[in-house]
Length: 453
Image (cartoon, rainbow, N blue to C red; front, side, top):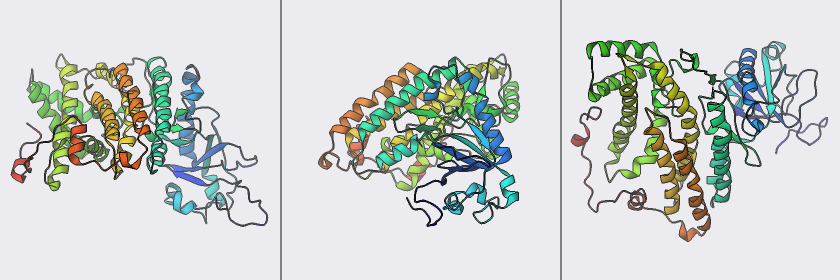
């Protein structure tokens, strides 16, 4: 680790350094020095504007009384030993690479050259917490970037994630009625012992069978880590759907689907695309090998319209069909299903990082394709659970079933056994037989009523 030469300092790293930049601030490791206090060992600091720091602190500690009721909660949630303070002047080590890495503050004109000005220091606050390790996505990225993947580590990680799900996420939802609402690989961290903990509570809520929708769930755009139906909790939907039901007393499935298609595109115009690009990327890496030999220029469009939007339209349509009662949408009835599923969905989506990294490899074995298929089956389970609770036991069976495949891949350490797999082999591994003669998709075949078929 490089340190700046200073005859008044030892060579030992004492100051913090920016290791991450978020939407509202920057993370320093080790922790920054608080004004009038000694540095806190084995901690990190999030440096933010005061108002954002107070919000983050409040978002964390308000759930602590409930999460503490879960046995061994410290193993599953990073919500303990959280403090705030006014930062002392940042030294040279603290400011190393500050302008390059702390974009969330530099865009507010707080730079390496100006941060120690009194007016800037007065505007800042740190949130200090234990260092919990790298996030799941980073752990997977580092592991799969190696020439020989450490599948023993993947087994350990999978077991710890399953433990987090059983002993952390499920009791958090079912017993304490706390819903994170933003679970994903970057919000689950992994320490040196492979313990996994949930972080970042900014979109979380507590819900105890109230008759109103939590504010945090209203007017949300599409997000890749929550069910597609999260776009139903807004005034535009309620008004549009009431008009639709007034004009169509007993709409058929296809009439409802037509409404869903129109509403989805209106909501995208109103709220923006959100994570649609990420959703499409997930669908692409999971399903592109199911498609035969077609012109590449149409492949992306085919996936977007015949797969991604198909899943979205079908999902929301099923919700409306089941929860339309007495001429209106049973919003609260469906909300209970959404909340039951929302963190299960986000947790499961964290496994997509494995597929993304495998998909980048030039040489991929048939066993590794089995890993992708296993994760694909978990995602399909999410997509097929639109109007009912996700079967958690079935999901756990799928995730636990990854371990034998990881062990099989572990035994295949010889480069000779990990050769480049053809598109034909990929299709066969996914259970789809490749035809010896696959007709090219023609433009006139593609340009048709993709949405309303």
